[in-house]
Length: 268
Image (cartoon, rainbow, N blue to C red; front, side, top):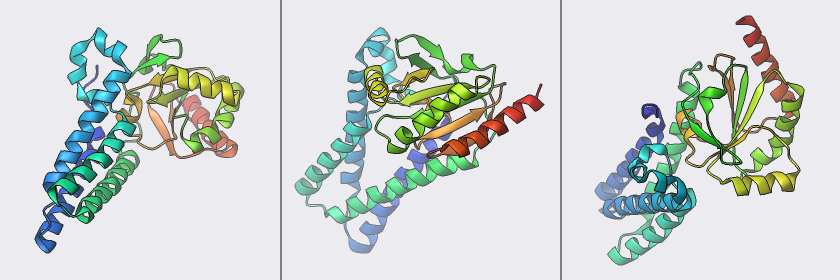
């Protein structure tokens, strides 16, 4: 496993700072003490998100029980965390008599800070970072390392079946995979299991090659890509040359692929 990528923790750190600052402001300006409710809600939702993710991937964790404590693997269930935060926040504010306004304001500020930090990390980070050492699985369960797939120009698409822009851009990416045999396309699903992905592909009549599962979303975290879809363009040496956050249409994709091919040709 490669060293922990501290840039992946910048956005959560900003979110925690925003939570604390808003809570402090309300306490000093209105006398509303909300921090106990906030930190208990954050801690409880993180624990629930981690436990849920571990249970969803029990087979992998049973093979290496100590890895359950490795929070650096990024394995958290978003749905469990959000639902727990809502339920716990409502319960704690009601039980303690804490006004809900400072709690809601703090979490809204935290969400904005997290999103802004993620975008800044992706936009301001080094453009030529190498492929991260991320462990993936093919849809049949075969393990593969992302770094081992380098050797030719590469397009890495980070996506999920529940993401509307991901779904809309998939036909253009599938077509490009056929039209550009000199480029290796990788479709790395973030957080979902193989059965969900296969059902989606069958329903949409998609036949892309190189579709992988990344249940812990390590690829997104270690490339600083927190929004979906994000498409990363790597040269033949495995170094990032282009990053696009959001949906790609055929024309926009073709422009970037031609640029990628031209740049790779110049490196020979």
